[in-house]
Length: 132
Image (cartoon, rainbow, N blue to C red; front, side, top):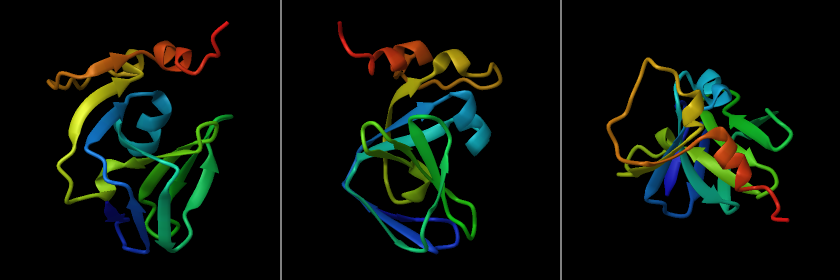
């Protein structure tokens, strides 16, 4: 998959993906103005052109954006070394919406009709807990 930011200063290449998920957490909504349309792309992501600016938004993640136009590029999950790219970078893709996370933080002013797997924030964190 090939994509770019709004001004074209940064281009991104990642392995082909078919699925997109939504994150309704308060940080993603504050960052993007709505839910983050997230494409899990693993660690094999290449950026060319300008260097993305990275912001450490939590103990476990960084968010990246274009220093010229401000386009949101990625959420980087540090423990997994995984890039979660914003779907809007890839204008020619026909993604399928498959899942939603932090549904317990979704505000009441929007609702989606898609049939998706839904997880609360606690259910997401529980997936990363080591088993006893």
